[in-house]
Structures are given as C-alpha cells and as structure tokens.
Amino acid sequence: MSDFDRLSRGGYGANGARKASEQEAHELSRGSFHPDAARKAAEQEAYEFEEERAVGRGSRATTSGRAAAKDRPRSNHAVVRRPTPGQEEPSGGAVVSKRSRLGMAMRRKVREERGRGSDPVRSAERRRRRAERVTRRQNRGGGRGSLTPLLLAIAAIVAIYLVVFSPIDRSISLPKEEREGLSQELKGHVPGMPYYVLALGSDARKNDTVSRSDTMILVRVDPLGGKLTMLSIPRDTMVEIEGYGTQKINAAYAFGGAACAVHEVSELTGVPISHVAVIKFDGIEGLVDALGGVTVNVPVAVYDPDYTGLELPAGEQEMDGHTALLFSRVRHGFDLGDYQRQIDQRILIKAIMDKALSLGPTKLPSVLGSMNGLLGTTMRCYSIVPLMLRLKIGGATVYQATVPSDTAMVDGVSYVIADDEALAEMMAVIDAGGDPATLS
Image 1 (cartoon, helix red, strand yellow):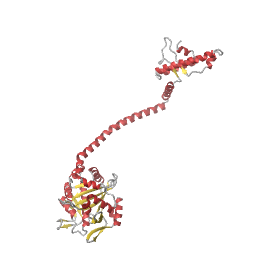
Image 2: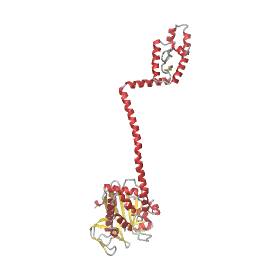
Image 3: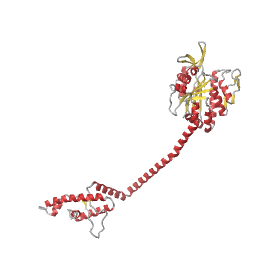
Image 4: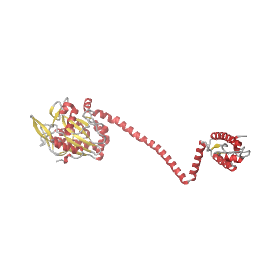
C-alpha cells in the first residue's frame, strides 16, 4: 500500500480531506511551492502518519475506530490524492506539510498577495510606489549623466590655468629666499573672508642690491563685500626694529626684506597680514602702458621742475606709463609734502584698477603677464582673477586713509610720529569694513 493510500485512510473526515486537498491543489497549481519541498513534505508526512497509526492500533483494543480516530492528535497537514486514471493531475501532485516553515511562509505570501490584489486602494498604492522607484532610478541615471558636462568644465578650467595662468604665477612669484622668510610672518585667512595685503613700492634702481620701500600701503580686501580699504603708511614713520634700534619704517625692507616690512607694519597697525606685493617703480610704467594709459583726476596742480620735471594742472589727465611713474614720485612743491604724494599714489592705484576692470576678462592674462619681472607677490592668479571679476561685476567700493601722525625731530633726524590712540580707533573702523574717512 502506498503512502498516499495510507494517508487517504487517516482520521480525517471525508469533506475535510477533500476540501484540504482541493485547496492545496489550487495553491500548488499557482506555482507557490517548489516540487522538491513538496516531495520532502510528503515523505515527512508519511513518516509521522505511520507513528500515529501505531498509537491508534494500541488504542483500538478498548476503543472503537471512530473514537480512536477522534482521540488521536489531529495532523496539521493537507492531503492531495494522486489522480485516478482518466483524471487530470493537479500541478505539483504531492503532499505539503502545513507545519513546514517553507510551506507556512509560502501560504502567508499567497494570502498577502490575494489580499492586496483584492483591495483597490492597496493595489493603487503599490503601483504608485513602484512608479516612484522607477522614477528615482531614472533620475539617478540622469544625475550621473549630468556630471559629464560638469567634469568637462572643471577639466577645461584646470587646463586653462595650467596653460595660461600657471606661467604668470611663476613670473610674479617672489624669490625663494623671500618666500621662506615671509612664511613666518604671513597669516592664513579663510577663503572669501576679508584679509590684508601689504603693497610695497621699491625705490630700487638698476644694479641696486639694497633698497628701501618708498611706498607702503596696507590694503584690506573684502572679496564678498567688494570693498578695498587703502591705508597709506608714511615712509618716515618712526619704529623700533629689532637689532637696528630706532629707524624709519621704510628701512625695514632694506634690513630684512619683505618679511621685516610685514612684521613692522603688523606691529604698527595691530592686524595680521596675509599677502604681500612688491612693485618696482618701473613696474608702474610697464603696467600702465600695458593697460593703454589711465585717466587720473589730479587733485592738486603739480609743479616739480627741479626733481621729476613734471608739470600738470589740476583736473582730469590722461597719463601714459612714464607720466604715471613721475606722478607717483612727486613730493616736492606741495604744502602737504609727502602726505600729498601718498594721496596721489592712492588715486593712481584706483585709476589703474578702474582701467583694468574696464577690460574684458580675456585681456586680464595679458595685463598680468605684462608685469613679468615688475611685480613679486605671494598671491596667485586663482585668487587675483576671481577678485577682479567680482569687483568688475558687482562694482568696487574703495576707501582711503593715511596713518594719523605728525612730524618731529628726534636726535636731529626728521620722523613721522604715529598717533597710537587715533590709529587704533581708525584700525577698528577699517577692520569692521567701515570708511575711515568718517573719523574726524
């Protein structure tokens, strides 16, 4: 007798076995169960049924077959009979244990699928979520594709910098010994935040090995605010230089180069300096000529026949490079003396900046390239060019001032004595981004 025949004669009611068989056949026809799992379940069922029959034989001595069947533990299995000849065999054709974990999981999944399929709301929600997943996948694919133009743009910018601006950076870089000394004096700054640049105008002539800084201007740069504040430092300002005693501040450049000048200016003004730019006198001439000349509003008539030989009426003047150079040097014949020269230098710098900003972006590299050998700086094109473009697009606000001071004779030497209290008040305004001209 086969396992299936034994199982068919178990203690199940006819209707119960038939219904279980039909239900199981239906589930098997849906392909919910793997044949191997069904086969193993059938073998396990046959083994358990034989054990149950052994228990039943012992009980029939005193109890009727119906009572014994009633007392036996009920099996939690569904039976599917093998078909008789001529009947269609249901897909699967096996016994599956309802107690098996695989069977329970499969039935639960089938019930859930049926439940979702019969609920229009849940079906619609499921379709919506599926559509959202498809959309997200498509968007992710599109996002990856959109990176290509961005990467190409970055590559183009890097290539332009390496080909166009990198040679300019090398040409305007300070000598190695100057950079090593400045590394101890210059302070870093947060990109985009205001910082200070010390501009030094060297009076070195051809074949000079030692020179003083004829011009010293501390510039506060506010990239985001589009502000530049220029503070002129009189070259005869009295300072104490370590190892050299009382000196004029312009001697610091001669004693210790740009690093010493940065140190003394930082001590005087009480602010950290992040960059330095050294311009030779001849540099102004070459730069202005590269710009095609500049327009300068001369505040006071210039009459200096004995020194520079320059004569200019007050008012708007067109200057070439040589005239601009002489204009920046004149300090004789003015009632304010060197103070007037400082004012004229700031006016000239602003005129140069305005002309540079009026040029198209494509001409900026040629302007910077024209300063080869005329400018030495710690700044690089990747910070200079964006700053110039920002000032060009958003407009530049330029404030100007001179260190509050007075003149005095000390040990037979004429000095400019800074007013420490007034200077501290001015630096507080400058450091806050205000206009120092508002101070009385």
